[in-house]
Image: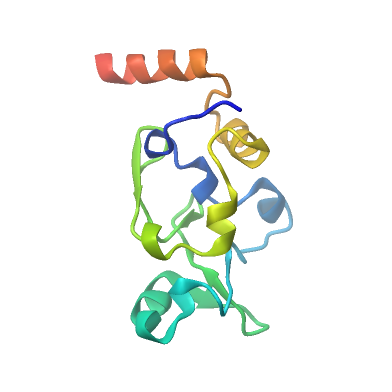
Length: 127
Protein backbone atom coordinates (compact mmCIF):
# COMPACT_ATOMS: atom_id res chain seq x y z
CA UNK A 1 0.00 0.00 0.00
CA UNK A 2 1.16 3.53 -0.80
CA UNK A 3 1.23 5.96 2.12
CA UNK A 4 0.56 9.65 1.59
CA UNK A 5 0.95 12.48 4.09
CA UNK A 6 -2.65 13.08 5.16
CA UNK A 7 -1.78 16.56 6.43
CA UNK A 8 -0.76 17.52 2.90
CA UNK A 9 -3.99 16.18 1.41
CA UNK A 10 -7.43 16.20 3.09
CA UNK A 11 -9.29 14.79 0.06
CA UNK A 12 -11.05 12.11 2.12
CA UNK A 13 -12.51 14.86 4.34
CA UNK A 14 -14.73 16.20 1.55
CA UNK A 15 -18.08 14.80 0.49
CA UNK A 16 -17.65 11.72 -1.66
CA UNK A 17 -18.20 11.59 -5.40
CA UNK A 18 -21.09 9.13 -4.87
CA UNK A 19 -22.80 11.43 -2.34
CA UNK A 20 -22.37 14.43 -4.63
CA UNK A 21 -23.92 12.54 -7.56
CA UNK A 22 -26.90 11.66 -5.34
CA UNK A 23 -26.98 15.23 -3.97
CA UNK A 24 -26.63 13.77 -0.47
CA UNK A 25 -25.24 15.84 2.36
CA UNK A 26 -25.25 12.91 4.79
CA UNK A 27 -21.54 12.56 5.22
CA UNK A 28 -19.84 10.39 7.84
CA UNK A 29 -22.34 9.08 10.36
CA UNK A 30 -21.66 9.64 14.05
CA UNK A 31 -22.81 6.44 15.73
CA UNK A 32 -24.03 6.37 19.32
CA UNK A 33 -20.92 4.36 20.21
CA UNK A 34 -18.50 6.94 18.77
CA UNK A 35 -16.54 9.05 21.24
CA UNK A 36 -17.96 12.21 19.65
CA UNK A 37 -21.50 11.07 20.53
CA UNK A 38 -20.75 10.57 24.21
CA UNK A 39 -22.56 12.80 26.69
CA UNK A 40 -19.42 14.66 27.79
CA UNK A 41 -18.71 15.63 24.15
CA UNK A 42 -22.20 16.97 23.34
CA UNK A 43 -20.94 20.51 22.64
CA UNK A 44 -18.44 19.18 20.07
CA UNK A 45 -21.11 17.00 18.49
CA UNK A 46 -23.46 19.95 18.07
CA UNK A 47 -20.66 22.13 16.67
CA UNK A 48 -19.36 19.65 14.07
CA UNK A 49 -22.37 17.45 13.27
CA UNK A 50 -25.96 17.78 12.15
CA UNK A 51 -28.98 15.48 12.37
CA UNK A 52 -30.49 14.28 9.12
CA UNK A 53 -34.22 13.82 8.48
CA UNK A 54 -34.05 10.35 10.09
CA UNK A 55 -32.54 11.79 13.26
CA UNK A 56 -29.06 10.32 12.72
CA UNK A 57 -26.02 12.50 13.38
CA UNK A 58 -23.56 13.08 10.51
CA UNK A 59 -20.50 15.29 10.32
CA UNK A 60 -21.53 18.70 9.01
CA UNK A 61 -20.40 19.68 5.51
CA UNK A 62 -19.49 23.31 4.90
CA UNK A 63 -18.37 25.63 2.11
CA UNK A 64 -18.64 25.14 -1.65
CA UNK A 65 -16.25 22.19 -1.62
CA UNK A 66 -18.50 20.35 0.88
CA UNK A 67 -15.71 19.79 3.37
CA UNK A 68 -16.12 18.32 6.83
CA UNK A 69 -16.59 21.11 9.34
CA UNK A 70 -13.65 19.72 11.32
CA UNK A 71 -11.20 20.15 8.43
CA UNK A 72 -9.03 23.24 8.51
CA UNK A 73 -6.47 24.45 5.99
CA UNK A 74 -6.08 24.19 2.24
CA UNK A 75 -6.90 20.97 0.43
CA UNK A 76 -3.80 19.43 -1.08
CA UNK A 77 -1.44 21.82 0.70
CA UNK A 78 -1.80 21.66 4.45
CA UNK A 79 -4.77 20.50 6.49
CA UNK A 80 -5.66 19.49 10.02
CA UNK A 81 -8.58 17.84 11.77
CA UNK A 82 -10.20 19.57 14.73
CA UNK A 83 -11.91 16.29 15.62
CA UNK A 84 -8.99 13.89 15.23
CA UNK A 85 -9.19 12.47 18.77
CA UNK A 86 -12.99 12.33 18.56
CA UNK A 87 -13.45 11.33 14.91
CA UNK A 88 -16.16 8.76 14.22
CA UNK A 89 -15.54 5.18 13.11
CA UNK A 90 -16.23 6.09 9.47
CA UNK A 91 -13.27 8.48 9.48
CA UNK A 92 -11.05 5.85 11.07
CA UNK A 93 -11.76 3.38 8.24
CA UNK A 94 -9.97 5.35 5.53
CA UNK A 95 -6.24 4.72 5.50
CA UNK A 96 -3.55 6.54 3.58
CA UNK A 97 -3.21 4.94 0.15
CA UNK A 98 -6.20 2.61 0.37
CA UNK A 99 -8.90 2.43 -2.33
CA UNK A 100 -11.07 5.17 -0.75
CA UNK A 101 -8.06 7.45 -0.31
CA UNK A 102 -7.00 7.04 -3.93
CA UNK A 103 -10.57 7.52 -5.17
CA UNK A 104 -10.85 10.80 -3.22
CA UNK A 105 -7.42 11.95 -4.42
CA UNK A 106 -8.37 11.26 -8.07
CA UNK A 107 -11.70 13.06 -7.72
CA UNK A 108 -9.97 16.17 -6.34
CA UNK A 109 -7.13 16.10 -8.87
CA UNK A 110 -4.37 14.99 -6.50
CA UNK A 111 -1.66 12.50 -7.52
CA UNK A 112 -2.16 8.83 -6.75
CA UNK A 113 1.50 7.77 -6.89
CA UNK A 114 4.22 8.71 -4.43
CA UNK A 115 6.55 9.94 -7.18
CA UNK A 116 3.93 12.35 -8.52
CA UNK A 117 2.96 13.39 -4.99
CA UNK A 118 6.59 14.13 -4.04
CA UNK A 119 7.01 16.24 -7.20
CA UNK A 120 3.78 18.13 -6.39
CA UNK A 121 4.87 18.81 -2.82
CA UNK A 122 8.35 19.88 -3.95
CA UNK A 123 6.75 22.34 -6.39
CA UNK A 124 4.59 23.76 -3.57
CA UNK A 125 7.69 24.28 -1.42
CA UNK A 126 9.46 26.09 -4.27
CA UNK A 127 6.61 28.62 -4.63
